[in-house]
Amino acid sequence: MSQELFEERIKRIEPKILEGLKNKEEFSFRINHHRGQTKEVVEQLQKEGFEPKKVAWAEDVFTLPMSERKRIVTSSPYTQNQIYIQNLSSIFSAYSLDIEPRDWVLDLAAAPGGKSLIFSERAHKVSAVEPDRQRFFRMKRNFKEHGAKNIQTYNKDGRFIYKTCPGWFDKVFLDAPCSSEAHIDGEVTWWNMRRVRKFSKLQKELILSAYQSLKPGGEMIYATCTFAPEENEAVIDFLLQHYPEAQIKEIDAPFENKMAGITQWEDKHFDPRVSKGLRILPKGAYSGFFMTKIAKS
Figure (cartoon, rainbow, N blue to C red):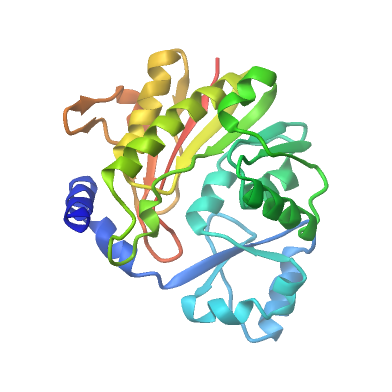
């Protein structure tokens, strides 16, 4: 029953998604500038027999065939933490936050920390929040291994950060806990609608905390790695109901595997502004993803 329901829902969003979930031909990585420079790292990978392909929209992001995924973890750039393996959709979402050198960035659900590492290369300082204790300590170790020294870490519940940090941050990123539908590539075993509804409730609490933690004039991104409109457009619609003055900004995505946010799902009609959200369709090194950029007046 779960399999049939999941596939039926996905087909109503975009039938191409199901095919994209099955075909994972590439993986992606970026250069960790805390440990190395792009030219030297790429040259070292080439010496070790890799042929990384540069992504068109970034100078320091590359893809390789999935067949190289196991081998690259034995390469010297990987063992020296000069490269960070990360999904292309995730990297793009983090690069889309317009960070200035003096910014203070809040990463509200940060583990395992890949996006915080990106922010740490661009911002003055980063506050990384993670409620799960085990994931929190793995994240701290990740930051240390990759040489990031401007990240503050907090083992806190992101839903309540706004109470202690109201309007503190120049930029906020919320890659919200979700039902992770983008990671389903075969038989549906753990997915169900109860899971979707549970995360939707949590995400609505988190997005209010994120927005209230943002400075006036600041910018945030809400993101998930799931397809359910209840966890995506419905959450943005919820924010706009509470803060109608919030501005939804266009996202320039220089690739073809994308679609706009949807404004209607089942019997629900969302604020038309949610159409400015971006759905990334799974293809190549891109996994399924949703993101919306929000500015605070």
